[in-house]
Image (cartoon, rainbow, N blue to C red; front, side, top):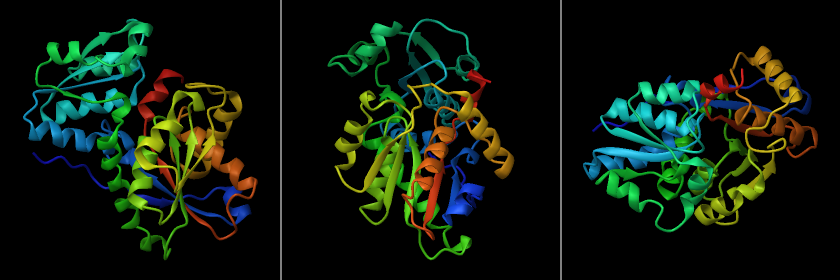
Length: 296
């Protein structure tokens, strides 16, 4: 089974605050690889899909919320590559554009409530679902775990293949949003200390991202920056105004829960002098644009 999508383009990112600080940046447009299997979600799913195909698994089952980019990509990938899919959702039945897409893509939905969803990391959680879906491949929330991180090595490879086209001999660091920490950990593993990786935490620290990254990638080669603006899924007028301004300057669509927060955190750190003049940064657009329908 051929499990590939087009390469993400690496484009110059020109914004007044970057120019003022003499910091060079390029944006890796993971949002452009596919209209449905978008962003870093594809890279986190790649190894899981290969494992499922190798085992002749009839289907895929995973978890997420009612605006989940991960479940959206999983449902689309299942339909594209011939796997049945099931989603275990946080909370109680709720009608959202994402939920309607999941149903249209053929995903069978199970609403766990909030207590049931909190139990997802407890021993034995998966046993009744493996019994209900025998032989199916179970994927952690957000495509997390080592398989998800390993799939993200391709993100680095795609960016490096395009560096010369920017006129750069090399780059200094990565910057990206961190929701589960899997993509960040994957880049840290792939870089093996060659370049720093900066993660803008789109969720509070007590959601376990620092621990997840450390368990996958160790304690070195990366730095985490707070960017959640009050909590998971929280956004405010200042963030939305910043996103609108950036979109006007660049023409690149952003969303407020991950990529917009990450770019705003980068602006603040550039203003604070974290990066010296002449630094070259790769900013990762992690996709998730379908989620904008939840708040626009």
